[in-house]
Image: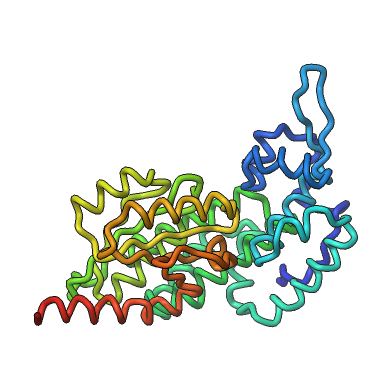
Length: 319
């Protein structure tokens, strides 16, 4: 059952909401912040909610679906200013082109996993996911199943092909699989210690979880302190835990000015002896980054990013 080649149709979505949504509901549905919605409304004239007698915004179903599609295109690397002002027909053309490209790159077996959930076969989905972990091993599972599955479900949700609760279900099942794999990884052997977190405003933790597993497979001691850690607390954590590096994840919902400001503050407050690694769609699209920030553009590049850290650690032990 293919899900990726279905043309986008704003008027015939299976999961298209039938009732208008409040700004809180739209924020939860789309992953966009309420401030972002207000800024777009003022800057681009979209979304264009109606107002109740007491001034509360109300977003009709077609605008909610259009926001979903815009979110998907932004997640693929497009700038908000390039897609938010577009008419629905223009967005549909761009989305269809992206679908055609994605359909050529997506593993049919990953598509089949999502199709199982579309058919309500949750038990079979869990069994197939567990089988892929066993057959592929943890590292290939991340690269060949977890990453493409997350991309595909994000696309399917934006196209109205799966409801948001199924996307959340997939995330939860991947979390369970990764936690199980983490529990079975051998004890760290390199002596390298990396602290993992996200900064305030970044509530998505799946990227950090996948990176943690990949690091552990490389013999790195990982310290995952959770999500949205304020920089002053991150500074305290570095003083106490003495990591050799910090690994941060930034999803596409991150605002560029906020991300740059946070990274500048982080660079100023974290000792220069601690490396700062950053990955995710929210960081790879930025250009002018503080000098100490090392961008890991793909998870397959993580091993290469560790080499200078391991070299520095070995040199410190021999000196």
